[in-house]
Image (cartoon, rainbow, N blue to C red; front, top):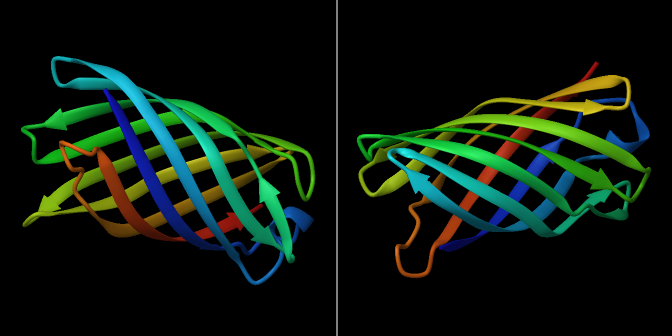
Length: 156
């Protein structure tokens, strides 16, 4: 069972490091999910094969991979956790370990999600990120998930 997710994201970094400077970043991430379900816990493997961001007018490509655990609470809300590794080629070579926690709940026929935590280890710095937004529920036939997230980042 495969799912393809295209997630446009707009973030506004506030750090003073070169990789995070600029007016912001617009990125498009397309992931392919494959996994299995055990009771109400779903395990997914995630491979990101297209991610382009603009930082200081330079294009950044970073293939990524992660694993995630999804717990389904009565098919109404989800608690999602994932961790992975992202490798940045440009503007500077970085290896990032990222952890994310999300709560997804339904409001009518729409999925609303709140990202409760994201910590990225970036060399000797810690980057905290958070986002909230709304998305359309996945189609059981096409397995397409679409969402738009607004994020804030702080580097210290």
